[in-house]
Length: 303
Image 1 (cartoon, rainbow, N blue to C red):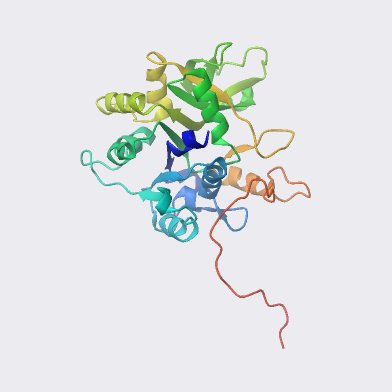
Image 2: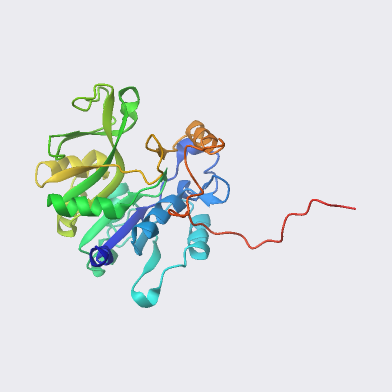
């Protein structure tokens, strides 16, 4: 597995404006918003990468990225460039056409030059604005064992909330047979009528498959989004599998939050305030990294 991890490349999508999270995103991108005290939202995805043994990471930025760029530069220098490791920012370069990133798929498409120069065996694409703990190496092992061309991570969500997510339909072998982005009438998981299977926005691609899919998508008038356009198109062409989320948070229920609104942001922060919090920030076996300001100790005594 170590050699397999070394041959993987990660691209974190971190260019979102986070309009529903305004005013927290007034001056910064959504992945750069503070969460749980000292952390930025992107720290959770990056910590997952490092804890999974993935150390070749591109971060695609766009919207008001100064704060995010500075955070990455100051807080994520723990990899060794001498060993071919990196955490590197990919700003929009207009390498393909004159448009900025038009969607999640387009952000990867416009950076294919940089991506393919790394000659990855597998490409992991993930969102930089979700809070969760996940070992991507487990998912990669599943991808290899299934002989998949594409694997997406999925989590069970209550059927009543499923209209907020991309919903996955699978057969008995975990192969994806249907995908609908935010459907009005989501389908339940067979045998679990109160739950649906939602995409987490984490994908593993065989690079050749991804390149063909992105080139085909770029040639069409689509939204250039993985969930709305690329994944549904690939279902008709290659084997796509769903990996059930295995939570490294080690709680009774799986924890994954898409904190896309101010209410969701507040509720997720409140999850941290219990004696036994729903999301554990203190697990030494799954450390969460960030940049810590070098400041003097707090002073409580005054003359």
